[in-house]
Amino acid sequence: MTAHPALDKLTAFDSLLSEEECDLATTVRSFADDKLRPYLADWFEAGEIPAREIAQQLGALGVLGMHLDGYECAGASATMYGLACQELEAADSGLRSLMSVQGSLAMTAIHHFGSEEQKQEWLPRMAAGEALGCFGLTEPDFGSDPAGMRTRAKRDGDDWVINGSKMWITNGTVADVAVVWAQTDDKIRGFVVPTDTKGFTATEVKHKLSLRASKTAGLSFEDMRLPGDAVLPEVAGLRGPLTCLSEARFGIIFGAMGAARDCLETALEYADSRVIYDKPLAGYQLTQAKLADMTLELMKGQLLALHIGRLKDAGTLQPAQVSVGKLNSCREAIKIARECRTILAANGITLDYPVMRHANNLESVMTYEGTSEVHQLIVGQALTGEGAFR
Image 1: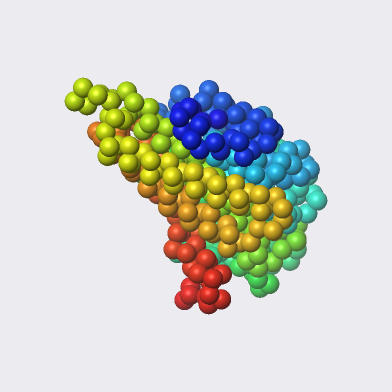
Image 2: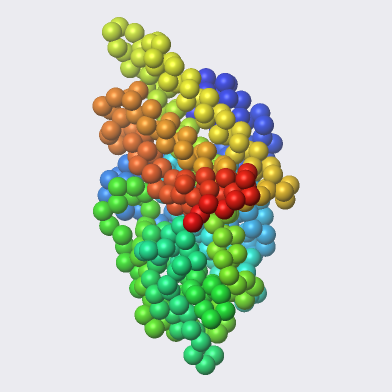
């Protein structure tokens, strides 16, 4: 699966995978190489992406909600889902975000907590990429502290009426359905909201310097009226959104390593071909030291990701272990991206190479689904038994 043969031989990551897992990873990588990579620089520069077309292609590939069972979802293992995230984010973090928000957030919320009618209505179409979803949790003033959200849903007869706003919502302007979380008189509840509902507005976030190959929106709800059966019936409180976030974080553990690997492959190829003072850049001690250190961190990150994937498949994975993985993968991936840029020197700042694009994207990946600081505190609490969030 790894494009650079020396890196592939040294890491021997594929030797830890089953034949089915290798085949899946190879398929997703080939799809990314053929259908996505030729356009990534243009999408990033323009800040535009054909999200619906890509979603349909991902649906045909079978990776949207692939870790879910039934409703035309693939029912794949957690590890296979992680490997798909790794290969897609090796192309671009924004594209992995599209898949992650669709499958790990919106589809997971409906699958785990929705009514049978909600599942039948949305999940098959979402798995096929025919309907896009978004996940309305974060608010302008409440990111790391979702319990403080101000969006409210109130009963009015048999209906619900929602007022409030959300921010940094991936897929928001292209979604057909939004899973919206709101305060009620009975804890936080989730609602399945068709985006053509009166009172629902999505406004694209412009001028981003990161995740430019991804649609990001602010959502607003003004006296948005929903029928009583729009609520997710099987969950109340923060357990609902936090369960979904844990699924998305799991994908990032693998995904960020994909971005790191792509940067390292690029740096290796560049160092092999770039001649400085009559010999390849790869022949200098400082370059080799950088490459060696980055390969070490990539290997450790991939091994940790695979370990966490195996734990999840065994049903023993703990939330704090997800935080360990997300914290490590994001922190080391962005370090690798920045170090690779130094090997490419001035060429590293252009879109002719992917390293600066990956570095910019990883700035967002470090922040969403829990900042690095939040995950440090989760791990700290698991170690000490003391909560230090306040």
